[in-house]
Amino acid sequence: MDTKEWYVLHTYSGYENKVKENIELRKESMDMEENIFRVMVPEEEITEVKDGEKKTKVSKKFPGYVLVEMVMSDEAWFIVRNTPGVTGFVGSHGAGSKPAPLLPEEVAVILGEMEAPKPIIDLDVEVGDWVQITDGAFSGLSGEIEELDVDQQKLKVIIEMFGRETVAELEFYQVRKENL
Image 1: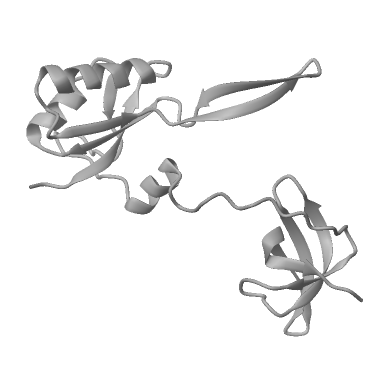
Image 2: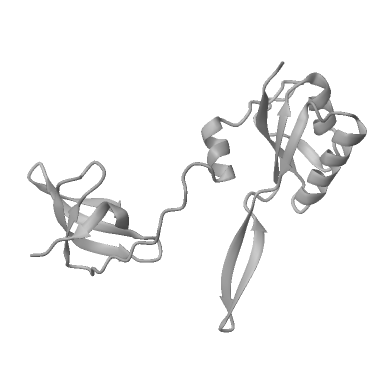
């Protein structure tokens, strides 16, 4: 039994959902449920402020692309490749060569399985304050905050290493305020 893997299809922009629908219909009508599994159009919610009003809309994460989880058999490859709206597989070098699948790490990132969402940390600091680094490569060092990004939960800290000042980019969970 061949293994099922994720592949990326290139489509006409704006036809991603139609391609997904077409592949799912063809999968059933051509009895390919054993070879073609999930078909996805990755989307994300974007919040915009227009005229003082917050509006949330869903947009395609990768316009012009569709992900398909399948066993790369000759028949499944032919069916997917010849679906209306599909212009080809990403990672195929033409001349009838089959495409390379996505790496497991790439799939994990796209599907959001890489890590659980980090909790929001309320770090009561400002630029110029000193923090103790408690996690990561610079653990145990102290430094002065040079820059803060509360929304992204990140900060830049000036630390001294090897007799020189250097900037460490850290996340809120990696530091604690130093009481001087």
